[in-house]
Amino acid sequence: MLDEKYIANRIEELCDKKQMSMYALSKKTGISQSSLSNLKKRGSTPTFYTLDRICDGLGITLPQFFSDDIGKLELSSEQKKVLEIWESLTDKEKEAVEIYVRGMKLK
Image 1 (cartoon, rainbow, N blue to C red):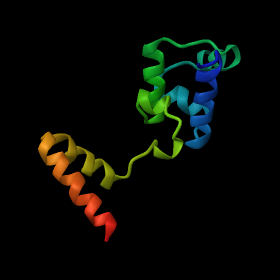
Image 2: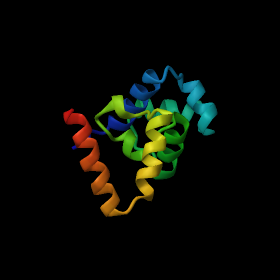
Image 3: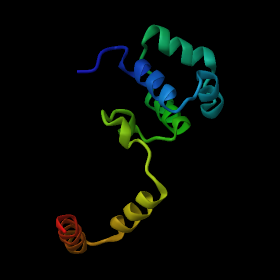
Image 4: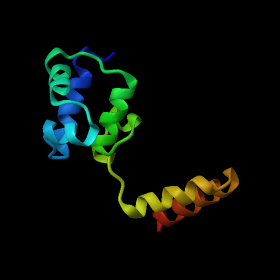
């Protein structure tokens, strides 16, 4: 269960990881610094729309915001290319790719 300050703490954590100040986040999101500051101080829960804007400003998705694996927040361009191709495959093709990749890993 998330505590009432989870979102505020998470925003601060992600800003630190991305070396982004609250001022920079404010400029990227169009959300006033005072609103971001109030969210942080009070631990209030932002609306879905506001949180979505914050995620956009941080360059992440909502699922990534709530993910525990911070190391997987950013994908390289190669990883993005592979995922784009993956999404276009049929289930049978995905299964074949998985078998192929597992076979490569064993070598």
